[in-house]
Image (spheres, rainbow, N blue to C red):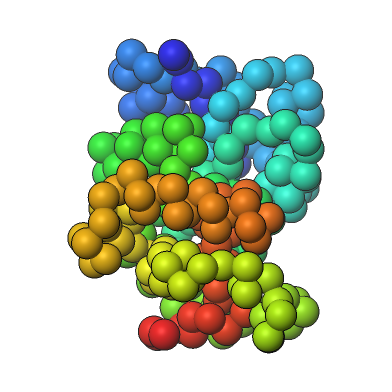
Length: 223
């Protein structure tokens, strides 16, 4: 199956570079490009796309709001936020808006391709160690959302093992790393993650991370 990719970035040279990398892959095709969020949303109305590589800082409509509008639809493509990390305080907001993950603009080609395939297959966490660094930096800036979990909250739906898995997901560990830590199979970890998503009404692993930080289950810098 060919993964249909859309590139959204106001820098033409960056789009050209990404397009060249993706065009060399037998399982990927760049089906659309846009220079800002408004153009991206318009194109998506008439174009079937599986994964959107979304820049954050763009004219007219930035990547965060574009991601929010795209992901609010009943059916929508997966979105990967592109960030320079050192400058973009908006990457975390992009995750909250529904993005399936984020990556650095200078990411090595192999990691870019792996991330696109991962997200397309449903594994939303991209580069766990980078995710942790970004969350540690920006979690203190989170506004109060009213999602704090006390006794009787949504977290109480989880079993002890599921809560344990959720904490490790929130720390940025991959399924393989969690399996090794808890002495479980990767398949078992994947099952636990699926049950966590269902019980908490979350879209994907990234939303697990966001909720864990917002609820105070995990704090910037550690547990």
